[in-house]
Image 1 (cartoon, protein in one colour):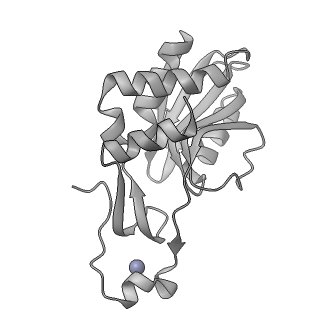
Image 2 (image 1 turned 45 degrees about the vertical axis):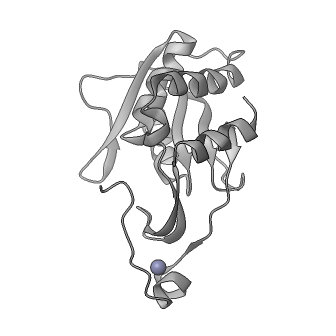
Length: 188
Ligand SMILES: [Zn+2]
């Protein structure tokens, strides 16, 4: 899949929202990518995941992991494409952990996936989690990279498309200054 095809999917499914958003990082943004609107279509999720899996097909990988909630569907579909296990990490008391009996065996090679990478915070937490179990992180894959490739995960990173959306601190936010109603994306 080309980057253009991926971006057209976001447009077509209304998954690239414009407005005034408060991101989980606390920053304000004039746009938001609602990947769930894309991934709710299994045939599209499969296609995107296959394209992402293809970037890592030459690597020896044992399992795929993504952070909840955004990374669950993607990890599952990428894992299916690579015929591997797909699991997810979730936050408990603010800390990214494995629950539900999920485990990573020492020495297992792990691909970390996330739907949209903005600050890379959750992804880095999952990388640390994998390392803490003795797993070996082989790479990071995302559908969209909003960071313009600026984040160094210390491993190979692949994304299907890049999108630049301006973000602002609350103090510097021009949308706040114009009294545009702010919403927390994904909350409804
Ligand atoms: Zn604002």
